[in-house]
Image (cartoon, rainbow, N blue to C red; front, side):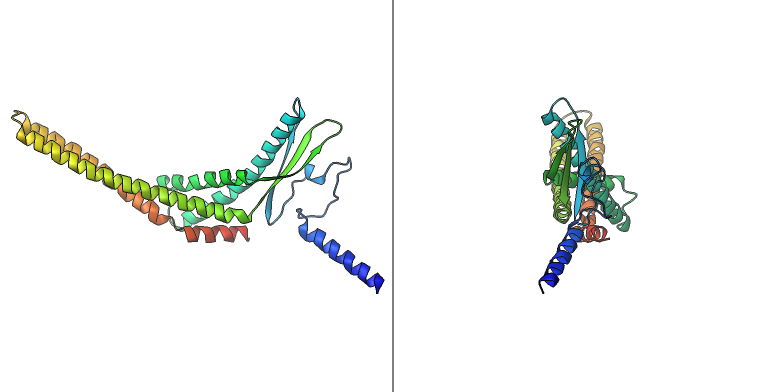
Length: 241
């Protein structure tokens, strides 16, 4: 009975190690020279992004800072690639591939998500090479936080565009009011060039109105094209592939 219990515990421990391993393939914990294996192979895991960096500068503090920056950059690249793929899939499905302005707006989401990600990166471990004094750092970021960050930035973009639309509508109303006041002043004046002034004012006003209406229409389309729920669903499909 005691022997069976020992075997059962051993199996459970081995199973636990396998499921928690951040690597796709099996390997030793350390390299032949005693360094952690993550210094030669960045872990890959379905639940986390990992980044590894190395610094070998004039002192330990600067070396560690360089290593941490490299590790964060590696994670940022992975997150950026994922979010860019999600945005591209969504814009393709929504038929927005020919609208440069809208694509630029969506691309801003990727940048903001990466910035949010970097604030939540965890430094998991460090290693100092005894021969070279090079400092190695491994950092990670949990993928489960990507959905919240992506959703938040999509909502932020939509709110920003809605505010710009409201501002453009207000500017249009102000332009109409200014035009009416200018027309009244010209009509009340005794200027001999009154007709020319009225014609010039009319042309300038028409141009302003056309530009504002075009801006409002563009912003309206951009707001309606941001379906946050669909964007999040699209992201989750990629995360679960």
